[in-house]
Image (cartoon, rainbow, N blue to C red; front, side, top):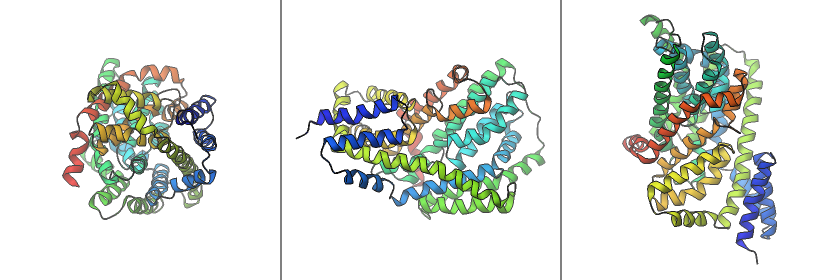
Length: 432
């Protein structure tokens, strides 16, 4: 016989200790699962099967297509076109380049679905440009990093696909895509408002005003790239494609636009794009596989039910419980990456939030993804923050201090999504 409390302590304790020792998350998840399985006398073959089954879902095929299409579009000139298009729209405002940064990130997020890709692509152009025009470096990096987080909320987002699978298939990917649109735009608008206040206070420069003809030209130039988002969202929402099929079609479209229309890079760069995409895919899929075995043991030890009972024993007040869950996710997001947290936390919290508190699965999915997106731009392990600081050649400590106003905007949007269900449900209910 085994002691469930000891097994739970082994599973969670080994995982946390290995993280503290800076072991990669994938190996931490796998090692804690193996040790716990040995204690429980569960066949290690069962753990291996869970690893394989975790990445055997047809829906997960959408992830490599999303990653590859985003890599092609970011390397093929779409970033520059989106920046020019955004500049034509709002560059004439006070602090215009900062506003352009936010709007370009909003558009690019609808193509790549990745905050890190956004910072790498948009940031490498915008941060040096802003610093040259007289913007403070910490402000330039801070607005780039926080606006990039729109990419994981605005569809298409492979993290939404991971959430749908972790929720047991009870949440539609199409509804999640639609549910993230309004919150993503709200986040962008909130960042624009706080940026306008800071820009006026610091007297940041305006950009030149574009003529109507130039605006039309820049819009048409960027339109082909932005059609990728239309193909994915439109295909899934209309029911013409599944998420996987729309991702594959978008990938073919991105290839044609990048190498056949824009032609800013040659076809001999394609192997390098495949290599970069494969690196990202390997990290994502290995995390999903390891987290699947970890999640199997969580369910075996009935940890989700224990967490549900514990939270309900603290309070039966819905507002307090949702605030506690948000705080917990915010803290976890600062020390772990998004994909493993979605896979680990969704089976644990889904019964509490959806079952006990009556929240919609779509609303909870968007809430969790935005919550963990904040973690991408917070120390100590925020991947988007690290990339932004590397591009801007500035310390994390200095940037983090300047990002406090942006953090406050993100938290306000998060609370609005948590307590106003219409923000995430109005589009899915109206269209689907």
